[in-house]
Image: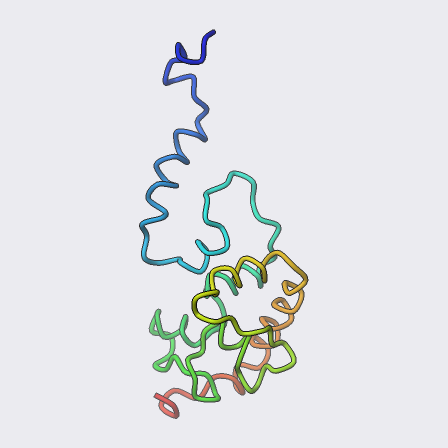
Length: 146
């Protein structure tokens, strides 16, 4: 059959689903850290482990995540800075053993891609485990650092 003569129902289901989703995904305001690493929707899952997914999405043991869902009243780290994944991985005084090189703001999208494709993923897993085990040190008590 000639390619032009193909009927719309002959397209694969994945193409019909992914095309509109991929188009809208570039317009979303949230999930930018994930978009920086995975700019296209794919059928094949990434080979990431749970801690790596938590790091990229920010959905994990982070004060910014807990404050967003009103679990905590403060989004600050115990050192006084914003407690997000990038802070813990690059500049927190309590996590220096797990630090990665801090990106400049204009190179941050490239940094995310490189970090999630190389050996830094092992360091990220250790960092997330450390944060989960030491929440009392890393997160100030509610009311202490608002």
